[in-house]
Length: 312
Image (tube, rainbow, N blue to C red; front, side):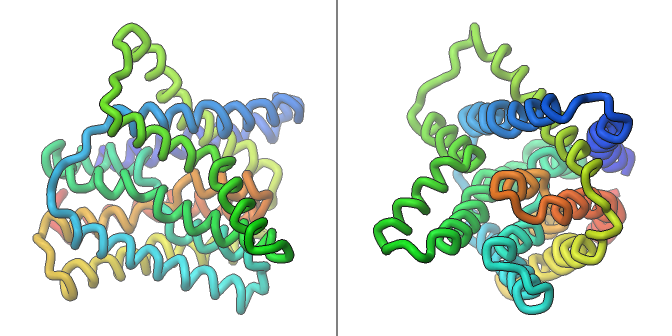
């Protein structure tokens, strides 16, 4: 429980730091923009390339694990999409961002250290498969929905081209895929530059979280609270319930895989969902508020799950 508290506190610490910097006007607007650009467009993709280049993927049967986690996640995306579309009256591209925020979790910054702490390195290996595919699955169809909608008045060939271009320009998705290609190519990071590259990896997450805090300073959280609450309920409560039901009652997975799927689904909304809001200039206030609220609520939900699975 102490480990969980330390992880959540660490995430909040960077966000609060960025928020305070913005509120006391410590940095001029142009420097905040430079900071955002460096974090989102340089350090984050570089960190993802290095991470997926170095990570070792286990050779195990992960079919049931993948189905439970991603089918439940896609269902949550669809629910979030249509809630925002039908009831909140968002445009299709905004609804895609809303759906992503409701289904995409913080599997790296919170998930990996949490799983290592409660399950140990060996039992955490299946979880790494979910981390591997998490962004690729959710980001790909989100980009397709947004790009097709925004280019809907063009010809089929132009729509296809713009969608492909949008996926290539999405630096986070590009970083993941490029890192995976390097991983499977068999190329190794030269030892003399490995430590230097890892410095960038360690800088990326704090910069993204500080950028999130800086963004929060520009928005009125109260005005976004209703939508953020909907997203948090979908991500922190309904998603893990669905994942648990799929893994236990439908696919009847082993207990360890049920724990991994449920805990992974209960992780808070990932800060990378804010990257999409930033990248497409859509729902930035709502998504940033949701990341903070979801991270706070996840402490209690994950604590209850630890007790439920007798992992305390």
